[in-house]
Every structure is written in C-alpha cells, then in structure tokens.
Length: 292
Image (cartoon, rainbow, N blue to C red; front, top):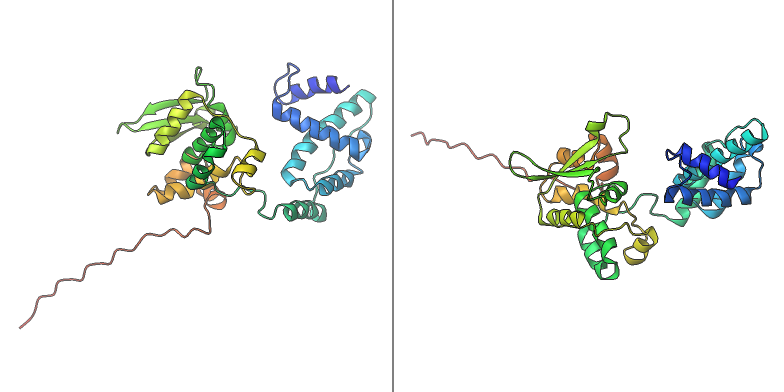
C-alpha cells in the first residue's frame, strides 16, 4: 500500500510517474514516523488531531515542519480511507493554545526563532576554509545576489538556461534574469526578475553560475561551520542591508529580491537593529549685503 501511495503522491505533487522529489520523499519518511508513533486510524484523524500536535511538541518540531508533515499525513489518510471505503476528515491545523504550545516548544529549543540570521560577507569569508568549494560558492551566490534557495538550485541548468538568462541594458550594465516559480498568481512573463551586476563580487557570483560549480549545503553543515542561527536563507536575509550599505535604493533592492510590495521587504528583510540614515545637507546661509 505504501508503494501504491507513493505513486498517488507523485501524481498529487505534479509528477505522475511514480517518482518523488527528494524533499517530498523526505517529508514522506517523516510522516511515516509520525503516523507510526501516533497510532491513530485514518478515519479518526480529525477527531484526535491533538495526538499529532503532541507528537510535534514532544519532538520540538517547528510549525513549518508540522505543516509539511500534515500535508502528507492527510494525503495518506485520504488514500487509506478511499481504499477502505470510509469517510475521511483531515487532521485540523492547530489553533489557539495548541498553536501557541507548538511554537513555544520550538522556540524554547531555538530561542533565535524560525528565521535565519543575516549571513554577512565577512562571516562567510571566515568559514570559507571549512566549507567545500561547491557549498561556499552556493552561499556566495546567495549573499551577493539575494536569491531564494530554490532559485539558486535552478541555476544549475546552464545548458538549457530555462530558469535564467543574461542581458545588457541600454547603459551596458549586465542584468541577470531569474525565473521565479513561486509567483504562480501572476502571468508567466512577469515572473522573471532582473538583478543588475554592479559590484566585483556580483561579477564573481555570475562566473560561479556559469561554471555550475555550486551546490546547496545541508543546514547542519551551515550550523557546524558558520553558526546555529543561520540557514540557507541567511544570504538572502542579509542582501537588503548589504546593498543599502553599498549605496543602492530600498525600492530597487526590493524589486531585485522579487517582492511585489515594499512592505514585504521592510517587514521581513530589513534588519530593524541597523539604523540607516542620510546626513542632512545644511542650507547655505544667504549672502547679506552690508547696508551703510
């Protein structure tokens, strides 16, 4: 039945050939552990949703991990009940006190929270000798181009270049165009964003992309060699303030990040601990003629 379910799941996530993407396969393995330990029949999932919450609290998993697991668990419950010709109601998403307890259990284990700390160029430079070259290159691209992890992974297809291309604007500036599959609510052509290559480090990042010599590091590798506060979003998290410090405008950086609103950039990507300002220019005193 598990093999049959994997074919069913591959169809649900958009493949349909019986193969599961590595991440979905990982989520399925995690869901199997959850299902095995919770010991609840699929027909009773909705009634005993709290058992799944208790499992997550016990293991101190994050709310985002719970969301991934419940998606697979509910697919499994539906699949089994369909075979057994039983009604199925999915595990409910936690609300109120349960939602708070899940978050508290995770935050108590990791007080810095769910989000990655910004990864700064000097922090990455210090870790260079401890990282494999492909992993360092992947993080370097993240720091200097501010791309999402999935967008960087998609850059590896350098032959077909379906997900990225290079252009020149009217001023001769190189523009890296990157496709954003996350933006499914807008038409396909508007999902492309452009990042100008303005600094030497960005030129180096572009050369790395062309070489294909980069690979996403495991989160535990980042924790081991950089810090527990960082993950694969660290470079993107620090991109806004890095570019502001290099004289770029907030509005432009927001577009390079691929955000549809400035509020999104300000809320999640501007470090509120850093105070940015422009020195006001003092107006010249008016020249007064001396009156005799």
